[in-house]
Image (cartoon, rainbow, N blue to C red):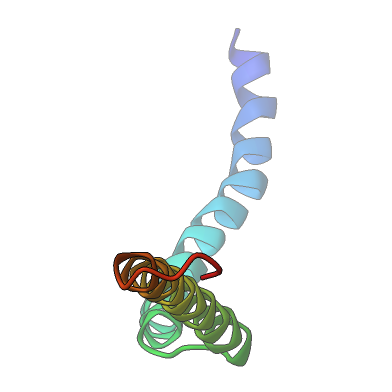
Length: 87
């Protein structure tokens, strides 16, 4: 048991500093990563802007199409009410 401990202690001393260094690096770079993520959330990329613009245009075209259809139906109703057969 003591022979195993004699061999295991130096091995642990060689592997653990890497873990500690990695943890220290993660802690040191965390504010930079958080700042970059906040900047990404706060800004809109060109791709996102294009996608949003396209969505707004499709919605507007749909609204205009519905309004045009409603106006056509109303004109036909008025035409029939006026007594015309070929509306």
